[in-house]
Image (cartoon, rainbow, N blue to C red; front, side, top):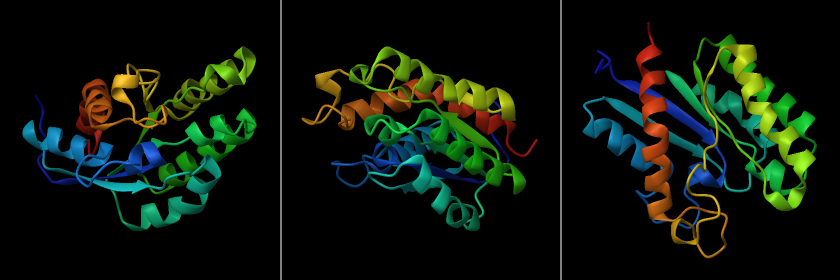
Length: 191
């Protein structure tokens, strides 16, 4: 394992899935991810910039304040609310592109967390939406985790009663799933 020599601060720019909607303190994605990374000997702080209900447009309005915190990297997890509201996938892609471009301009690496829509939005909409993330990852040469809620979406045992937000076990499953990708990405920071 290649553990970085200096402490890293990672900003997680996201929505309720990052913020830890409905969970007690210490059970959010960022808190659990930081704990797991530290258990693996990584000196990493994961700062929670998640805002419940946020869309990709909200992320555009907040990216400057995230970058003002001088993170070593940004985990970008946005789009779920765009999909839930049936917003135009082209607009969501343009917003994510603006966020990524702002990070790139500051030399801040981005780990992009992919998102999918609910099946009720229709097959075509779902396909258009899902295609946003690999396209942006290819355009900018980003590390991509294809679907943030992999193994959790649709499983009542891993979600709160609303069926949309992961419970503590769901968050732990998301961290287990994303951890190898996060670690590989961390190994590229500062090289």
